[in-house]
Image 1 (tube, protein in one colour):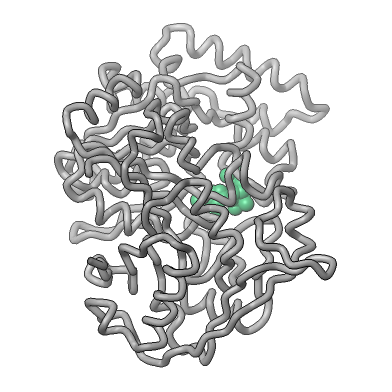
Image 2: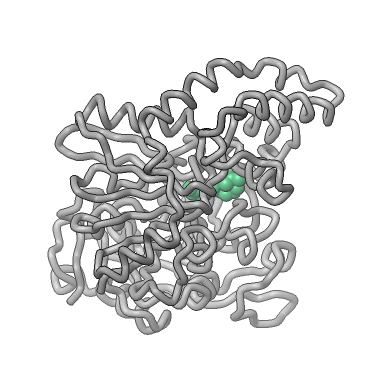
Length: 421
Ligand code: IMP
């Protein structure tokens, strides 16, 4: 099969980067379709360590074309830094294409995010993601193709002046270094020529027609989706399969394999309800064992047991064809492992993920408990190598979620991955 997508099935940070890196080794195209530099992953290879926020990990693979799709929001300053990193450490010019319609995060967007208090109230990453999507919806944003127009600087200055009228004290907006931003835009124009600013829909559909392998890499996770997540504690885009249609210009019906990445426990960073959050020892141990700190902001992640109610919702919403189960090794050493099978609310059993954050916050998880295992499982090469308790956990999840588990990740390295036949 030539087309596949990798989508987070929880609240982000499921370990999509490693799975995407492995599956994109021979890909012709890797496409991001949602979000922007709120995503973050560190990729390590023999030439060093790379921190990417816009670029997918496949940017390190020779002969792979990377497209930052029109559903994304792109910060020229951050993107130029990432491209510089690649050239310095790797001496390669990645084959980067940008969707002409993608929106531009300018230096005023993160400032507006602070002025609007979204950073505090939603616990956003502070990267200006929300305000850039707001401008998109208000039809007052800049798109990537605008950066190539001769009147861009004048339009930018006009927009900034208008924006200052919105606040009594716009002094933070006064501090924006316009000329520095224009210099970076110039550099981006040199690094990514106009020929690579593309209309993604015909480009990708043609690639698929020609039998090329195309991977769509989702950022964040299903439960952070602006429409189907725990609104308002969500991101501003669609990380879900529908986002491929609107954010890359390719119908989701063309994407044959839809891989839901599922972490073996739950984490969330930022605010919003999380029924299985454990603020005691269990949560702390998961955070320590799993190194659960935000890749973009460094914030400690909230941790707790797996939540089957949220997971079933996410797997159905995306019609996942398979699951990549990640970080199973983090569960080694626990006497018992809990999994929330359903919620209770006002004495009633809830099996369907509620559609409002208020309702979700009133739900109490009901757990089933499994025996844990002590062994270090990070060297297993097949499911049969796992202790029987870990095998039992994987079997249970596959049956209960009713989606085949095709990949089990048991460590950071590529070699620490079980590909299930
Ligand atoms: P924003 O995307 O910066 O607007 O943040 C909105 C919410 O999404 C906050 O709760 C963030 O912590 C969360 N979020 C955004 N990007 C990621 C991610 O890549 N992983 C996990 N959470 C994220």
